[in-house]
Length: 628
Image: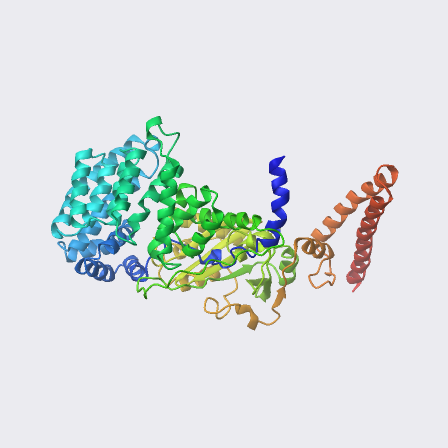
């Protein structure tokens, strides 16, 4: 009863304020998972193309400048690149086998190869053969890690790798302590080394909740101002509240005051950085989740605003698909905040951003996402189906009785647009393909990242991205996506499609070539470089956003402009006949029953007569059209 009453009170507030709360957040389509810094992205792009030069220069710069924090973040990303495309690292090592940077990437690669076989699953879910291969690869990594440490004795990053190795190889505590001493001797405040050590000391590995919190709080107490080590207790809190399985033992429970203190310390750290700064994106993502769990949704919303487009894999991957969880939590926080704003009040404006930081050469520039849908149906058919999608659309005819569809500017989006969850054009295509036989291919361009999502019968059936700085999908995944595309578009040979998906070089060419292979219309000129590219096309029309009930009325009446569609589509007849079959017995019962009353009986009669009149008029017009 209490929950029902609370819902009745908060729902009107949510409906009134939901679109305004969080309107300053970047659109879902702009959110990127773990975007690399520009210079690292350039190195990754070149590495996947087979060129190790930018990676070599980048790591040499961090070594000469003793930029250990950057180095500790770059090495795992470059090793991940080599895990999927090893040629560039092999060429680098063949050219310079004693290069400390190349050997360091190789050391990290050896550890990642072992974890790739073991997977991140719990030990109970890992087979005996997987464990044997895992430990064998870790044994092979030992001399490579040692060589990396010897080649650059002042570098703490080989010891970061060694600490991760110790966790996987089940190294005893004295070995871990020795590695930890080597790391802190070289860089006592190195964040990457502390993260590796924290994992070793947590309850799911070789420590306990208490030991993990003690370590994190001790590191934070001795951290330099502005250091990310101040957020180490927050990461321990996530391990305790989100990751840990079961109820902790009696002597290993953490007092909630320590978790509250961790949140307070992390909030202070977040406030010290400019909004949108990728340097603390990981901290802010963890902080947003913990604030949601603490029912502090207003503060969580501010952290989502500070995160901007920089979602991180963790902590969201603990809960499911990382990017989807981030977006769902962000939308949920908006609705919680809206539900707490009094109905006749206005939402509080966002907190002003903190002091702008100095120009940051490593900060990625914001990139505007561009989306366009290719729908295998003529414009009037798409317009009929899209009346209730909740966003304004521009629809233009395309060759082959197809349509181009894009979003139009919407200064005041409604609540339904706010709640769509993913990028709005994809959500709209999900809506207007439901119950329809034709598919929609939503194409994306965001900087040098290109992709598509295929929707058919209201379901997302395929998704792909061409990202020059990310691994290409394996053959099985690409073949499965190609098979789906071929089935939907009637292509008999999937090999050209698979080849286009199995590479990330020149993504613009690959995206355009895919349309040609599938027999789809070419992209309009200017797509990806300017907004609303359909404005220059002949016969482009805007389908205005409608409210829920307005969409229902327009769907029942047919054409979006109020004109009858000639001839009427089968769906129109099915809906009216079903409605008439429903309302006729309702009307009869209303007049027959003495308990209904004349007013409600009159309403049912009016509705029945209205639908019958629509059917009669449409049938007469149908006869005239047939004769003509």
